[in-house]
Amino acid sequence: MEVVISQKKPSSASADGVSTIPLYRSAPTLEVRLEDFERFAVDRLLVLRGISDGLARGKKPDEMEKLVSDLWKANMRHPNTSEIIDKDIISHFVLRLVYCRTEELRKWFLSMESTLFRYRFRLETSDVHRALMTELGIPYKSVTNAEFEGLKEKLSQVARSIGQQLPTSDTVYYKVPWEEVSELVGSRRVFIKKGYAYVALNQVVSFVIPHFRSHLSKALVLTNRKWTSMIREQEKDRLTPIVEALSTSYLGPDYTQDKEFGEISLKDIDQVARSSFPLCMRHLFDSLREDHHLKHGGRIQLGLFLKGVGLKLDDALAFWKAEFSQKVGAERFDKEYAYGIRHNFGKEGKRTDYTPFSCQKIILSTPGVGDHHGCPYRHFSEENLRAALGKMGVGSRELEQVVEKAKGRHYQLACTLTFEAIHGASCDSGINHPNQYFKASQNILKEKKQSTA
Ligand code: SF4
Image 1 (tube, rainbow, N blue to C red):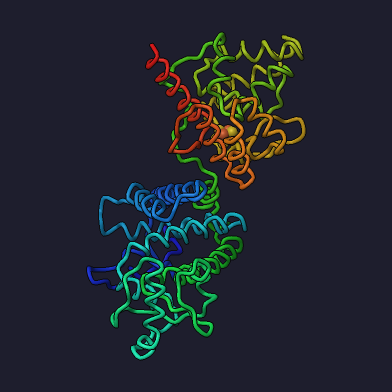
Image 2 (cartoon, rainbow, N blue to C red):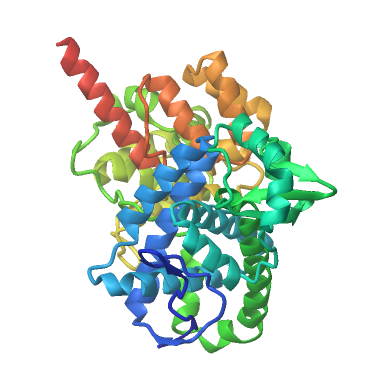
């Protein structure tokens, strides 16, 4: 296949070789196998989602630096070292196609790619910084020796106040309009005179990132135009389905049927629901017990989850029938609803063994009036969320943190904090799937039981 990727290999020479950061400026023609097109994009997506989670958790810059470096090493490796840069470039351009398509997607991608670039840039040498600035077309000139000597005392004061080495005549400073480095100005980490900030070479990331960001932002808008006017239609049988699926794809295990915990029996189901169901499933479960009915979206979301946690087909039929027959009668259940349960297990229709829904899919669902499916952190009002969290046993301090994350649209993080509050244990990987929540909860309960036995 030919991908719209044109990119010189990074040419920024460093003292110890070549920069490993491409600037993704333009697109050469590159042959990419369809499977690599998708696989590379998924690997990069794991990095970007990890960054998103780190930012939402409020990690500090040095923690973010480590996180980004670990994520990059874990996901962007390639068996052939010389292919790593190609993988970097290909994955970036594929995700540009994926994330150019709506304002919201563009915003997310722009923010995560800029953060990724920031921390990769920080790890490069000064020579590479200079070369990348030239490649980015950043116009600022370094301060002359004469000007440096005139400002040396002031520059030393600032360096001292932020715990940096005192400047010498070899130290490079750039003279930059102060509004270009507002983050340095805001934190008083730079000397300002007559509207110019004097930025040391080890601080240039603060004006390099806005340049990188601005270029990428324009490129995303252009890519979106090309996508809607041409690529989407031209590639409708090949790339388009991959691109459209990638932004919402779940990247973890499928949890079709839990092998580790085996079956859950009907007699235990209420107790297990109280101890180990995430809020979305707990809400569906409680609504079903209360109303003896769930609408279609709720039946699928809860039904597949229960299958994933190990409820066998016969038990599932008995469970749903026991509830529904109280409302619609046993005969109508057999006629109208049993089919859907068997369908979930691949026993009807296309006979597909359907997979339980991931958080991404549930969060993006659009429940209507009378529906109980969806993700409560996204779809509940604040008042209802508070009440539901209280019912789950979340203490008041943690409850405020959860609500704050939900308001900030960090739904999975809100769920992770709920998990941590209830179980008194951390969940570093974050919650990505309701069945992962269940499994992690059961593991913790099992350990606690063993330690008290
Ligand atoms: Fe369910 Fe996921 Fe929402 Fe948690 S974050 S309530 S597991 S959909």
